[in-house]
Length: 453
Image (tube, rainbow, N blue to C red; front, side, top):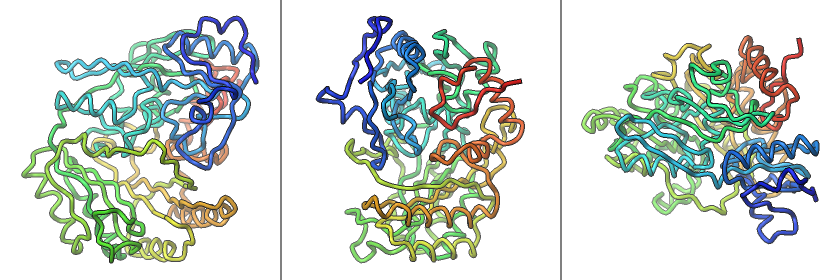
């Protein structure tokens, strides 16, 4: 057990060690296969606590993990033996509805923020999971259900407050520490602990959206991607090709049959939205059609806090998914022995693509499709089998293109991290890293080592 030095006596938040009753719950992260035992968990109360924990980590030489929502595919929010700095108790939110801006602590979840903003008919785009922490998804980029209309989460980031490795509290924006502000927008947790984020808000109240299940054939999958690409920018989709889950609203005879399970959001006029979603209904007779006018905040469904899936994943970018690729997806899903497997496809473009590639540390603005291959399983001994299935299918779908999205990367090594930050982006990030974290204190992430020249 790590013994905190006198310098930690100012910490106001909870300090949780292995002998505490709540230790196992405090160390748990979203993915159930990650089972690490930190020496100490500190649930910070404010930015001063954050600075104190960073100082302790440096003073003791302890590895430092930082978490908000705990959704990191690589499990970077928890570590064996070291210190976990948990900001999930930091949940201040200040909404200026008139100026359409909000200051949010990074311990807030996307669902909490979205519900509060919805009271004003406003929203900022995050991902598809309400339980994800604002810190993690924003620093990775943020690609969700408003991406074509309003861009990525980082495109609505106006400013941030951060505690750096030397304990300095900085406010960064386009005019202050502009190099660091550039790096935070997609460069992950490499540069410090972000404690507050200022976002732009958009008028997003009633949408046309919800869930649509279509029977999955090669033609339906390819047609869905084509329609999503051709749709008005107000329409964003996330489609999962997978066996139909035994949800209560899915007809029993369809359980286990391959479907396109899609989340759809049209952020605009309701009548125009009804016209925009109509082509998807004509691809095939829907298995489930829940598309309707609804409040945007309802897209974040309640999540069981004890839900901890055991899964392996690989992220890819692609420029098209045609009938041949769709055939491959269905063949591989049929061959998988995992209890649940899926290929997720997010059609991009629109507002996201109009931002210059070098404007932020997210460098894949021109890509048309973000994919994620997933296998969920139960028996730990079967992991190598499912990992091989995921890796092989992802490799075939990416077709030799190494590009990756940092937010979906697992623990896959420096080569894959470089694929998230190609070319000059990596070199620029390394220079910023050298300026703000030359000792690589913040290394439990998709790590960009500091430049050494």
